[in-house]
Length: 385
Image (cartoon, rainbow, N blue to C red; front, side):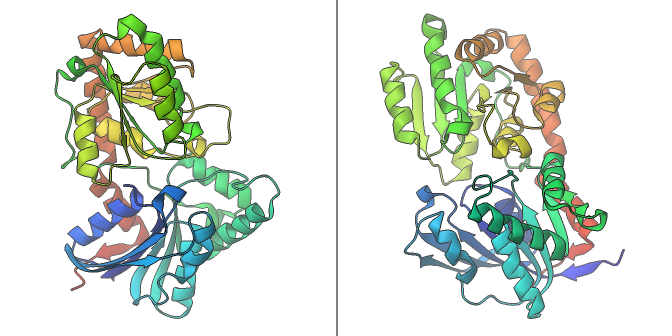
């Protein structure tokens, strides 16, 4: 395979939370590349800001915010026009079909040499079965799959689901799978006596499929057995006010701390490192991104050395239970409460699972994952100053 030296990159994505796009930015800038990043709002809570940032290696050269009159999802129609002009780049990474489509246009205009579609999720009938929005999304997604120079998926389940959805031939079906990772060098980890904190942590966008409500019910079910057990809820979303009200109604004001969206990922890592258990009670039986995804919070929990309680929804749940110190629990408050006590009341169980989580996390160090991807794409990242 011919290796191409790449000095400049575009990363176009929606959302401001830590994820593959942000990790790729840090990987490329650490290697001295010139990186042009566009972050569009993803959910209504992101507001109306589109942030455009330019890096020369690890130096932030310029940052500007473009205000939009619309919030997501209405604002998505404006994404292809923000900003109006891009600098030429060697490689364009589009983290959704709209972002990739603009990269295809840039390639056609010879302002990008390579265009890559990086899909961070897959869900059938994204906007409802047979709707005009779903048909439009599918046509654009299929076009990008067929015309991009390469594809990246988060999981085997997502790759297979998208290939089947679009009827992709073998030459277009061979997407690269890059799971969610973690920065193992910089992440803080729970101490060897982390079970003593008796602290649960729940990190998520607060929507129905994430199951924050069942976590509250489980804490209430613990009752007098919950001596010293507390919980941190990190994240915001449309259900935040309802969940706060439900916590008050259950008498959990002194048990649950709602932190809202935490912009500084170092603070998120600190909160994870001070916890004892990572909670992932995804709601089963609904159309869910999680069934095809590789949820980032699970890797964050693992990197922090936290045993995980997870429902049987994400495609890697059984692998996590086998190799990563996790336990699969039913989506039922009493069962979750009992699982919490089993782990926290047994130091030996907690230590064994924490060690397994740390060992498993080593497979998902971001530099390792990105080194492998760049090699498979035939790219060598070089300083672009």
